[in-house]
Image (cartoon, rainbow, N blue to C red; front, side, top):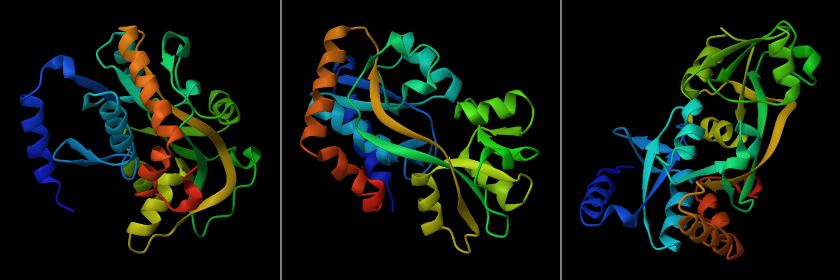
Length: 248
C-alpha cells in the first residue's frame, strides 16, 4: 500500500496548526503490525492508529517520534513527548513518575524457534541456549534470572528484523517476541519456517501513559482513552491488523 499521500497530508496539517494543538507521541519501532514505517515516518499500525484516535478524541493532532528503547522513559520524564502508547509498568524503571491510563488491551510474548528444533516447554530447557532479544527490553523474572546467572546468553538487537534473521540463519537457538508480530510475519512471509514454542514468557496488560506536566493535558488524554475504550473503538482499530482471537 502506498502511504505517500498520507505523508503529504500530514505535512500540510502540521504546517497549518500551532504547536499547542499537537500531541507528541513517542514510540519504539518494532515493525508491523505495531508500527508501519515508510520513508522514516510512521504511517500506520496499531500504535499509530490508537495514538491518533486518542489525540483526535481530545481535540489534538498526533505527531509521532521514534525513540530508542532505553530513552523512551527519559523523554517522557523530561516532557520531550506527551505520551507513550501501548506500554506496561513492568517495562519502566520508575513508572510512578507518570500518569497511567486504563488497560486498553493485552498481549503475549513467547519463545520462537525453527520448526525443526525441539519444543521449549520450561525455562530449564533454555539453559545453555542463546536467545535473541530486543535491546533495552525487560523480560520475565525467570528469563532475566537466567541471563543474570549466565545460564542463558542474551543476544541483543535494536530491531525485530535482525532478531528473526539471526534465528532463521540458526545463529541463535530461540528468540522472544509478541504474538502480534509473530503471526503477522507468519502470514506475510513466504516459506516461513518458524513456530511458537509452548513456553509463554509473559502476558501483559497494555495502556498509554502521560507526562505529569501539564496535568490538564494528561487528564484530557485520560478521558479520551476511557471514552474510546468504553465505546469499543480500541478493539475496532486493532481488528484492522489482528485476527479476532488476538484482539482483547
